[in-house]
View 1: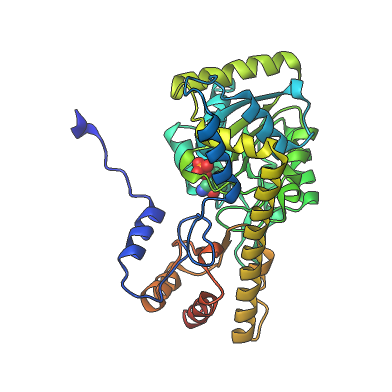
View 2 (view 1 turned 45 degrees about the vertical axis):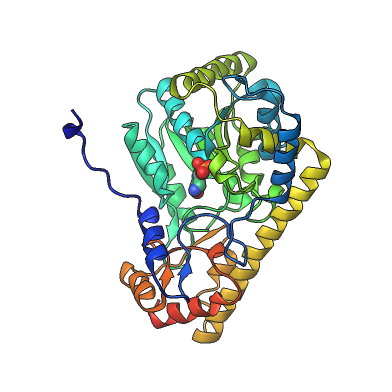
Length: 394
Ligand code: PMP
């Protein structure tokens, strides 16, 4: 029977990781996979995570099942971090998920159950996993313009004009902050305009927030999602703790649904719970419990926030340093966008040939669409990258 299976294309970023590992040059620079790396190239376990895990080992008395929607204390704590007080408790359904990916998958399944004729709208470009999950679920998809390849900023006029085509009951995926792969983001005024348009059209926003705290800070990064969730009657929000708590492999995420009234909250909650049961039954608990312990303990939380702030400012400093290095080499401000972008990624705007030349000649590994993981740099490798960018004629 297995002979009927089709071969699956290898994930491009994973393939790049292998290529990097096999490159013998000691000046090579890995700007590929989206994990945070400190200046020594490590992806550390955050201090508060270690402390919470130790406390958990010392105090945990059972590994029995939790609840199908996850531990309610985790749902409360993480929804509080993401939404603040934007949504009243009796309007918010939520279920823990295996990572942000699990939350997005579940959100799309829920949308399909609610509207069998749903079309999913995604930014062009978007995180490739959005596209493959949508394809896997056999959902119709439309791309909306997002990134201006000349300015390397959001082409907001084109985005709004494309989104004018959404229909009632369509789902529009928006990146809550730190857009992956471009690094170009909506400002609050633009969030307001998008919210108004979606409200007018009766479309459902699905906000993917995977980098809260990596852009302008925990509160500022949540401003868009909070505006949407407090303004519209309905919204889906998929949150990931992989990056901002550094718990990548623990698979920690949350799907939230803002509902128009208490009755629909109950029904939506039942459906979220039902989907968990069908797909994996109980969501993973370790990462969720650690996150909840940190968020609910003032000392652990303060330490986590302070370490996250160091992560954020380290990336911002690297952005500034790279933009300045390129300014010095080219005598122009055309790379100033690198300091304007936010989050872990920036799309450089290089051609595939230029990306390849930077790899072959300089050992710079970035994704083929010229997405760079800024956290893959340190103060010494910024110059290697700046030389490579100029040498490749970007
Ligand atoms: N959304 C986006 C845009 C992402 O970049 C990521 C992480 N690469 C995620 C969601 C979710 O990641 P995870 O499943 O590891 O939590």
